[in-house]
Length: 179
Image (cartoon, rainbow, N blue to C red; front, side, top):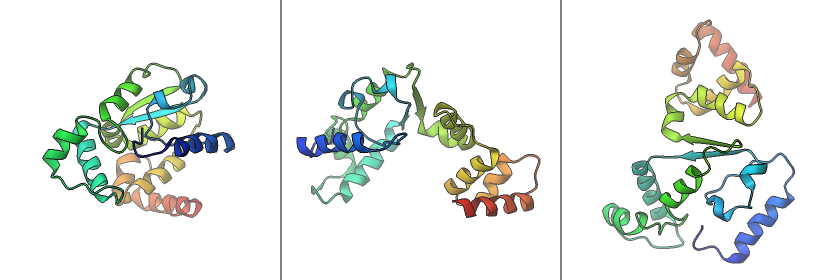
């Protein structure tokens, strides 16, 4: 998937995975076709997609910052001639989306859209935790939300019902000490 990686680099990636203690968290941009066969049958997987427009813009900015190649094209040319054809550093958006979409009904795969996760982050946190077999206390969810948001007072107001903001500040300050 990483078009510039040598076979040795890719082999070392997988050898290093085998050496990690379980349970482990692995983040990758590889399609399922490049991951160990049967991965979704033996591991819990969270597959997060993002809408096409945001991914195109994000990839453009990412690739213009890379020092491994001199990307000297404007956004429109990049979108039409590079991104659309899957010639990006991490491979094609449509191939990645199709790779996950074909497996979306597998029991061990949680298929999410980033934009939906952003609409209700607390629900997304609980959904991911449940998928991974964890039951998070409300304080832990708040702690995670706190680390996501800059204006955590608004976050607390949105997600708390039986506690006033002053009490919430105390809760968050206690949670901060744990992170």
